[in-house]
Length: 325
Length: 256
Image (spheres, rainbow over the protein chains, first blue to last red):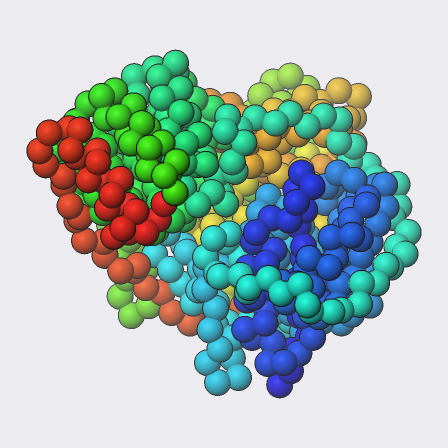
């Protein structure tokens, strides 16, 4: 059966988040030839529609309103719900981002639907769509099917490959008027807080520090390494509890769960609570002076040594090699 | 103020997970209050200390959850409610929304606090779902809240950015790490908690039928991720190790 799919296009700081393209690919995989409809919400976003088309959407529906300039659950839910009623899709996919995870349960409740959150892979078995998702922060996984209603899911960034961009694709980009009622939630201020500007949940490379960093000021050596690699900086709970860095950087069972291509663990012992947040990274490098540290059990490559010697050398070596490229 | 906290009993984050016949083995496992819900309890108590009123804890779970409710009462909450979910088929976040929605229907609410996500299921759905069901606004992943004249000023953690929002009560908020430092229950607190009211409710009490709470999704399998093999510990002079590592990442792992 053909499935008509709605896919949310999330724009952050003037650019799409890559997970939006990944969810288009996921939707295509299960649509069985059904239409893929992109959804764009914001103040001035229509011009982004053609990019969703290039990545595989067949059509894009745009709701523009100054009340959608900042994300609020109230504003976005009104606009998104209007599109759902208009399109009557068989499924709705979003990225499992700050916005996706916040708006999807609200919408699921409004339309009295199930919702599968934080999906990392998807397969079609016969007529049934089976979603896999981590539980216990990645210590285990579950396979979930929808018993009743539409296929509503959010996808974890960096787990499904986006389709090749194809600028020759064409599709209609349609504006829809939605009357957004006055919002009771008012966004007063947004303060950017990430040190390298690369978001942890979507970073392809992460450099993370633990208690071994010994102090807040020493995180600069990680920032330098991250800068060379275009990586995000993260931290273990130990480092956050010791106030070496902000809790926003924490990776682990309490904190962010990440799946980058490359994870460099620096001065991190590898407590189970941290490992839960990063063990599904594709390649793991550990740098630790204790050869018995648990982290070496799951590292693909390890260097036993003093991080204050290793990290600066590593930064220099990456600089050389990446410049040659 | 009428302050409510929704909380969940979860596996201790130190526990390893074992699976038999697609089910999680929980024999002998340690259970705790979901860590994010602990922040919610602490914040609720602080709000009561500042504004007066009463803190009610609510959980959906089996009888064992009484322990976690008692711990919350020992921290300083006033009363607790345990909504039993044992007879529910394929319970999922929709089910929890339905149960909690029924409980809150007749309640006067100023604020409901919960955790931003539970460390077991990890969906983070119940908070926003419940707020929608009750027709109130929600603010998720909060790291600071101040309430004055029926208005809350809230700082949210949005993937590392701090976003400040202002919203009128009643609201539902979900706690992110960094909101506060949860207190430990004191010995007198533990003694008092034993005598604090704890109400148990089932579907009949909430005027719900089984089909009202049946899950919309179903877990068909659970499995462990493939075990990671221990990798290569590099040897030799540090400069050579660093060179080798970069070269391996480039040519063997192909990640840079």
